[in-house]
Image (cartoon, rainbow, N blue to C red):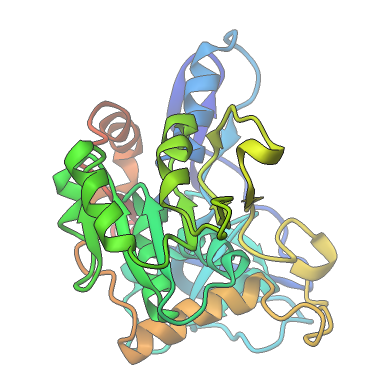
Length: 342
């Protein structure tokens, strides 16, 4: 097996490795595509390069689509030869992967493998939308039009919300779906948001970028819904790893700030991932159902990811892909590694 690893003191390398054993609840996959995370993975690469040289490399990647080569004796719903999408632990950038069954979902023929490989980012975004609990025709602003923001905007729109997106790159704004208002974060953009939010104010926001979001929240606060006494209200969800420095209580009114992490309940739970399930009445959207939701939306055409995959690299050129993402973030949206020649 060939794999992408992050080496301390060096960075990305493609090396040979041993394939893990296929346990009774595991699925063996030959990936066709895997998606590089421009957030989590690049952060790991930067940390590794700054570390002292030496030690074993660490595999990267957690979102892929391909073909099943074999299944363990206890695997259900998945068979050898199936086209599948896989997320999470085991779904590395590698020529062969072993993934627990509840992180693997079959793909209908209508869904392209390259589109399905974006599944992990979809799951992170839908978790944020679930936590927003948005209602029909409510005003939602998504800050950041990277992959997290692209998916969040589409999902809020599918939920019936009136959506605006703020991003400083026209390259990203042009890839937003019809019906979404796209603005830049300059004074003119904020003035447009102020007019758009009338008369009820902004009821939800999603901070879909990393870094310091303090100024964004301070400028957003006057646009939020407000009580008769002027106290702001609403809900802001944070799926993007942002940092904020705010004074709470009366300074933030009744605005709820919600952190959103992982791809759904069950993610990183080895018992769930291996095939156990939670009671649906109590946990309605575990990670497998989130992946199934993406697959169904793609199959029926209600979700389009056209134009989001801007770059594809052969698996053997993984180091170039990571370098390009780090050096040209304003020119790349989603980058896939291709295994077609492996």
